[in-house]
Length: 120
Image 1 (cartoon, helix red, strand yellow):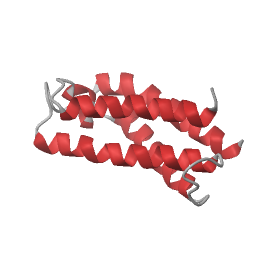
Image 2 (cartoon, helix red, strand yellow):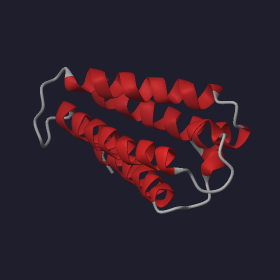
Image 3 (cartoon, helix red, strand yellow):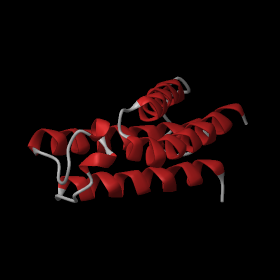
């Protein structure tokens, strides 16, 4: 599997998690600082929905950086890398132990794959 495709598969997994949150999955302790036990309130679900658009943009930027569709400008990968790096750091420093354990490693791997796509 190519690195850009691997990145997109990881993004798809995160999007599935966000969709589950939107529809009421009781995983509030695993996201958004882990301050919600059970399902997210409406505001948290809106954040989950917005994050889907960000994730899709990141995936498209990584595909473009590899010369694929949609052919965005080369600077788009910098935005994706920045958002991914910020997300990685926030997930490692979250007060939620469960969120750190789950999303810290996932976001780190996603960041490293995006960096590899950029450098290779």
